[in-house]
Amino acid sequence: MTIAQDLEDEVAAESAVIASVEKVVQNLVDAVAAAGTDQVKLKAVLDAAVANKARLGALVAANTPANAEAVASPAAPEVTG
Image (tube, rainbow, N blue to C red; front, side, top):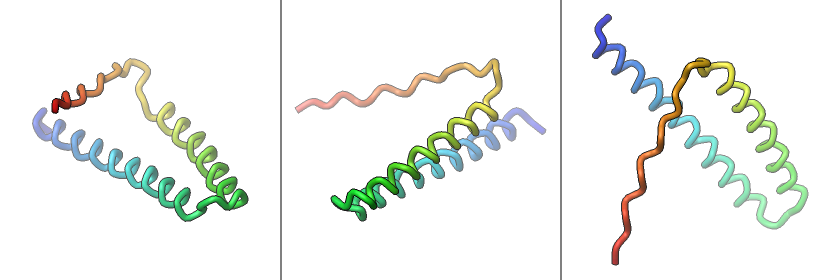
């Protein structure tokens, strides 16, 4: 396999992961909106978020090589006006 193909595969895999995280965040936003001010429903959303946080943390830890370097986020564009 070529380096170019390896790079394409990595980008595709990262894009899939990002899409999954976006879906989780959107589901959380939707659940909070649907719960409104109902304390019982909000507690259920909170409990689910905490459980997912623990699962996500474990998955990241289990699937990140020990020698992985942190990647800086791109700077946000400057807003002028």
